[in-house]
Image (tube, rainbow over all chains, first blue to last red; front, top):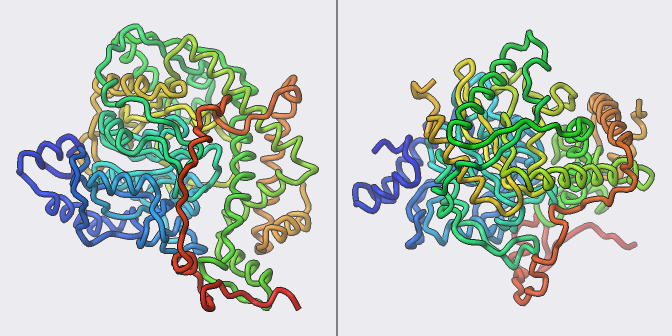
Length: 483
Length: 97
């Protein structure tokens, strides 16, 4: 058994056959975490084997947790200077469930500051490099969680996803990224970014592993009023028949003829997507192109920006440097807060907060905030209507491979407004959504995404599992000769 | 283009400030996002749509009637991370003269 390439199931088998111990797995993961520090996957590496025995499938399996989850007694910074010394006094429900299942925390992973970014470059501990090519970004915000699975440091990791923060870095890192139905996993102890869009999810090296991890961490939590009662085991859906299932994709968005011919990388990504569709059809799955109102697709990104920035502005108003975080200087409580927040937030975060504040001003609310919420309803209603005919939406996760750092920017742009932002549909509607590796362009991984209707997590995972088998990119790992 | 002073006012309301050049970047961003937001306003019949604030249309499954437990932090836990404390309270400058 080669640890780096192993899935959760591989490791389980080795543990159960007494071929390896939990301590040995932890030591291996810990060694790799230290060896790959140049990638900057971790804010904190845990050096002590700390195990709570259980009968769970995850017992003694190493994993990593994004640093925006509360972990009692362990530094939890969200990669922001305003929380740089914050050590929580309570556990996030996800962390508690994993601890109770006997899983081994290897480290807290790097993210874009307060999870508000998509590049993996804005955290206060520096940029996260893409293990497939260190001159490229891996995307964000769950950058470290993606890179540590891509490197094989851990077979799974936990992230959060408000717009695409699990699924996009999973695509750039050549791993599986899954966010289930909104509320299926408790958000208690996740530092809130935009509460109506925030999801907890996981990175794995196979679709089955994503089902395994989600089965352990899902379920109703009285700490989170938006959490859902758990319905059955997702793993049990994995081997169902897919013949006759129906998927759709957005016609104009996936047509290479609608883009600049000189953008050879984008054209190749789209051509490969169309090749993938042919293979999906060979499974007996019906795939059809669908016209989706262009004005709604064009509105996805501004809608996301308006809602997420407005909610973030409000959610982060508790970061004052009074109860926790570095104390600011000043003669009044206002001056102290002003100084703490001026020094504690990066420029990028401040820009998002100002945008959120502007959107929430009384004079702008109707035109900006309420209209964004109205578009959200139109998009979700249209999707739910389509889900009456189709089992899911299949799209390229991204129109690009992982960008070079110099091309990686979170500044607002209107280039490829739809192709780079359609994943937010999954957050608008709380839909289960998974990205899986689907090949390579210029020696970098590319990916497809499948999104289904609320509470159809098992169906989405089952379809993804069959496509994963068909495509043959399961378990690819950075640094290996699998390009 | 939105004036820099206006942006500074919004930033100060949020209790922070930014550098001059940062406001310039923000001005550029505002012109892009407001242009994009204009597209939203042009969607036919948008004003008649009920705003969506949550992923579910029906919240009845949320178990709101099941709040029968409370987890309360101790005072020691609450002040554990505070930089300045006195006895069992977070210490701040005098707020009332």
